[in-house]
Image 1 (spheres, each protein chain N blue to C red):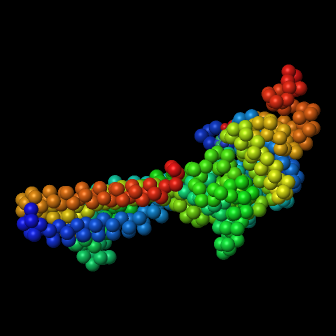
Image 2 (cartoon, helix red, strand yellow):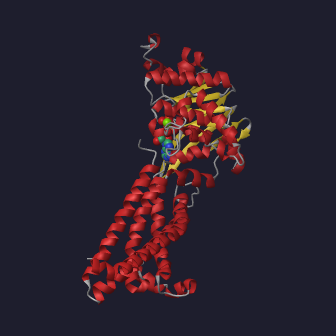
Image 3 (spheres, rainbow over the protein chains, first blue to last red):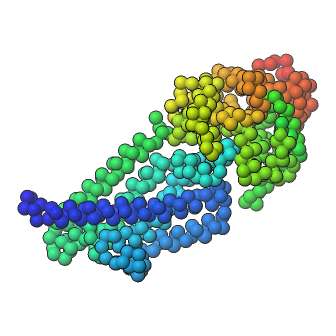
Length: 222
Length: 254
Ligand SMILES: Nc1ncnc2c1ncn2[C@@H]1O[C@H](COP(=O)(O)OP(=O)(O)O)[C@@H](O)[C@H]1O
Ligand SMILES: [Mg+2]
């Protein structure tokens, strides 16, 4: 055991950090894109605060197309784009680009789902109080769905964590890369098991932290 | 205060046409406590939605203090809306905000509001509705009657000339109903706020209203001062409503 840690401890620690960097980095970036997309989807739907059914149908369709692209294909397909903005297509930072782009439409749907939970009557009440659309979005739609958005974020983080393993297998580093190299190429099964254990641990920790804060944030059940 | 002339509202969609209101004309004077009574589905909520311009009338006109509501949009519509307070049937409170934050909400929509003035106003309003001690509670921690009081305080925050209440007592027990009606009367008399109460309960109109309009199947059956309308009912609906009144036996068995 001690020998194992001596040999692989540093490698596993580094790859864990790399995985966390890719996961949180791309989640944050994907929310920067996905949150406004989700707001737009909710606001423009029929009966929404900025009703535009045709635009909504078109936009919704576009998001479906983006979501249906398999991640591997997207990742390979946008290599030139990745090179253009990161300078390289290899490494953890380069992996942020496909991870972000594939997560954004997914997050848009998660956000849409959270915002839809808000009762239409509450939006109408705000309208009657003289709130502008912008105020309704920020102070009612988003503010009222914070607990639900947080729950969605934990699901997104864990899903994206899974995807970092795929980028790892094609040279982006992280735990996925270690698992792939040692488990598949060098046939060192115990290293692969160790990465698996770390990933399971990460999932559990992320889930419990978000469960805790979203429960704390929710003022509806007390 | 409010003049409604020949208001018609037809809901259209899915190939269906529902005439919710047809040729309704009403006049509400400043200082009135005006009751709109009718059975479920009569079009009462639709009337309120037209008054707040959440719903665009199919035809007819609504004048709010001489202003034609349909002609307003953007900032002017928002200003007109701030001139009326609305208490919705389901309260529609912000569930993630405290009682005080809910009441402060309309005040904080103004650009460059004064923080100290807002908290002073909120404290004053909560005192008025009898919730001085619950400022930091969340709506989920309150009873139905208390939520209703928060909704009233919030509706009064911008000092509107008129308060519109949709079924303010239908979800409350008799004792709480009594207290709620006393509060509304108090608001009308002490603050001089005109009040429109939508209800299906005759007892509510009897208890607090100066004027009443009876609507049935989207049409105005009759309207006028409460003693006149209930003393000499002209329409079948009014008679039917009076016949159902359990407290007063004199009108029974028409
Ligand atoms: N958005 C809507 N679309 C179609 N029909 C509606 C809509 N809202 C209300 N209605 C119909 O209009 C009529 C009046 O409804 P409403 O004003 O809610 O009545 P009340 O508040 O008196 O119970 C009912 O027949 C109802 O089904
Ligand atoms: Mg109703």
